[in-house]
Amino acid sequence: MALTDDQLTKTGLPPKGVGRVLVLACGALAREVLAVIEANGLDHVDLHCLPAIYHVRPEKIVPAVRKAVAEAAGYDSIFLAYADCGTGGLLAAAAEELGVEMLQGPHCYAFYEGTEAFAARGEVTSFYLTDFLVRQFDAFVWSPLGLDKHPELRDAYFGNYETLVYQSQSDDAALVDKARACADRLGLAFEHRRTGYGDLGTAISRL
Image: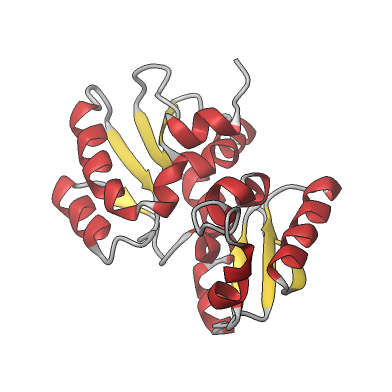
């Protein structure tokens, strides 16, 4: 069955079955994790994705991770494909308590670009989108901020930003065009960076 963004947003992606290693990830990373698994022939790796909509509800991440780890029977190890993701250090503390390795960094924008490289840029006036967030811009940015009903609030939210940075994981000209349109809607300059999978790809391939 083909993956849909609606499925990944609302229900995530359950694992297909028990394997030696379980990757527990955000639904926004599902396609990328699956691509790395396939490219590296990681037949022993299983994927369980939590709903991507937790991107805008980070208080739900830690309880959901705890529940998923508790229910993951039969795995030799579990890898948490999340960075801090707005949990204020709570996810890292839970991972340590549960004995689960996780990605390093503040969020997916950092590990896609490479956490050290991202930190070195020191950007404070850039707004970031990934492939998934470009496809789901209305569901994850425009509507949650109420801009669908009150577009006049745009400058109040984005007045301190200067550039929308699209960190692309794929080579898709249509997504680049859509990302540029998102920048126009937000009144921001546009920059495209082809990051690929960054630290996520490195971490998954080592499993």
